[in-house]
Image (cartoon, rainbow, N blue to C red):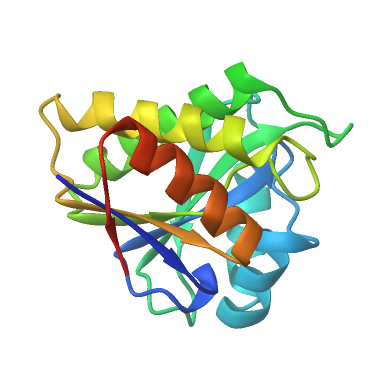
Length: 172
């Protein structure tokens, strides 16, 4: 499995699925969710909300609307209180990868889950998410490419620092 880091807008990324940093009611307001909804259309939120609420740490799939991505995987990384923690991020990342495998997808794009509205520290998020993806890559997975699409320079730098300190990376 190829693991890549890039800067950009996840709503414009062309992976088969993009991951939305969601709340467990699956409303799409600000941050990553807002960007996905603006680019992909209201139908993404309508489909998501119809599947909620879901347990925090779980993930559900909707269509991608007008996005380049065929699917949106909504990873419930926080509840109504808009707070998250390491376990929720770990579970949401793993469940997103599982949903991608269930669909037989080859590529998925992740944002830095829980670091925007959720306020979780970037480097700790990077350690957790990269660890989950590495462990998943050792399993029987359909995924060939996992991309972390990081919106701004601080997020990109945090992921790059953690990645390089642990094994080296391909960066775009």
